Amino acid sequence: MKLRILHVLDHSIPLHSGYTFRTQSILREQRRLGWETYHVTSPKHLGATAPEETVDGLHFYRTSAPAAGGARLPGLGEIALMRSLERRLQEVAEQVRPQLLHAHSPVLNAIPALRVGKRLGIPVVYEVRAFWEDAAVDHGTTTEGSLRYRLTRRLETHALRNADHVFTICQGLRGDIVARGLGEDKVTVIPNAVDIEAFDVGGEPDGALKAQLGLAGCTVVGFIGSFYAYEGLDLLLQSLPAILAQRPEVRVLLVGGGPQDAALKAQARQLGLADKVVFTGRVPHAQVQRYYDLVDVLAYPRHSMRLTELVTPLKPLEAMAQGRLLVASDVGGHKELIRHNETGLLFKAGSAESLAQAVLQLLAQRERWPHLRQAGRQFVEMERNWRVSVARYRKVYESLCKAA
Image 1: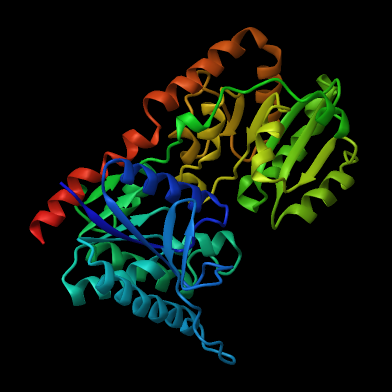
Image 2 (image 1 turned 180 degrees about the vertical axis):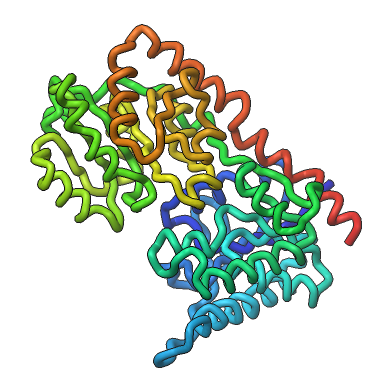
């Protein structure tokens, strides 16, 4: 069945984030299936200079930001964003005449899609990648249980119940959605995955780059990504003295940047470890592979909180696709991806001692490295590639389009 889907997105490429990479992979795989996809981004997409833009073969309809006002009551800014998106979405839907509206997180995209879908008689599906109220907690703009949190959660639940079908990225989120009163058959998991062809099993480290960073002759424990508080990089630094006590040649390599950048540098100085931790800053996307090749063990020390317990990240999958060695905290999002002692090592979330033990255990068991590398790569090849994940849309899409 030839399908015509209009996707409603928070932001997109050319911006780089886990959100945009997942979107890009979904759209490309849907197009390989012969489906027509169209794409509207919300006013929160930054940097667009025209109402329409083609990036890497994908055409995006941009939404202009609402006019800035003076001091506003809480919530008015969000209402203005939704109204702008609703107007733009209506224009595009009338132009491209989709059979289905597919709104992706956050709920600020779902509400306009539901309104336009109802007006035009088009089925609406809503894909939850994380809950907006939890993201606000992680960014420090609200606290769990606050009035804003409860109102946002109520809005999210309203969108979930009114969508024709709900997609989400993992079992943790699915369980939370079903607990809000949705039928089991109304919620489908489209797991995070990787484009396996885009990842080669890790190569040899670039000696010149290693020397340039002061890592020659060192064993490297690394993290490559955004420095958010929930990633637990403070715990990685906290664990380093115990690791160095047994393996003085170990260095930590942190590639990227983000809100915690200054705090992590200050922590390294306070611990007397400034010469043992290398901060590269953000590196061009095309250069990331060179930095991965420098790392002996990747660390994903996420703290336990609602977001990390419910949501599966992409980074460990990308690491496994490259046949990398990894240690990760035992939060729910990691336990859905990583099989302890088979595809990686899990340690007790929040425990610097447990993290240090996991790193030291892995470094001491070099004979197990080939099996761990192979098992991780095999897991993503068989279960976590985009061809398998995106195929899960077909049954729901076709059912809704036939019924419309």
